[in-house]
Length: 203
Picture (cartoon, rainbow, N blue to C red):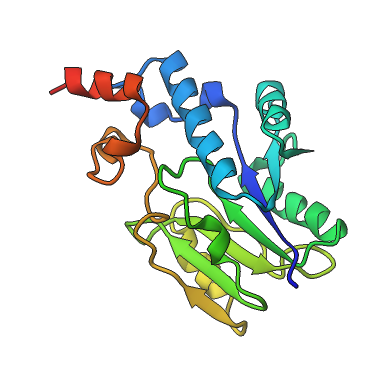
């Protein structure tokens, strides 16, 4: 049996979703970021979940949501993922699913992990990597995390020589970064009522 964990690197809610600033104020963006992250953790059940963060409010939220908190100050996204995966490997897990905390339709997330296989799920633009499932070696990831613009191609290159599956999943390819993402026909119905009211007022 493959022991799999989920790792969600989550930035401070108050600093999240800056590109939605033309539509939502700071408190609304924070509420949306927390709502999205909650959905990702729920979708990962029954997996053990870990949240990598460097913000007290996110750490408190993660603890309340039943996740194990990995404190990663000053490491940035890639450093936090690499450090978190080393910690998770040290706890005896064989496989980790790394997922961004802004997926509005994360329901199939646990199915991404396949024994002995690196699985990459790109965003719908096939530029970023929304979900990555990777077998763990004793030191963590067998390849370094390389998030940021163009990460899908870099992760593909990093997985060269390993058993690899690229999964073009309609739901997991969706994320929320821009106002246009909120109006996607598969995203809009999933949004909390308060946000749908705001969007209705923008028509």
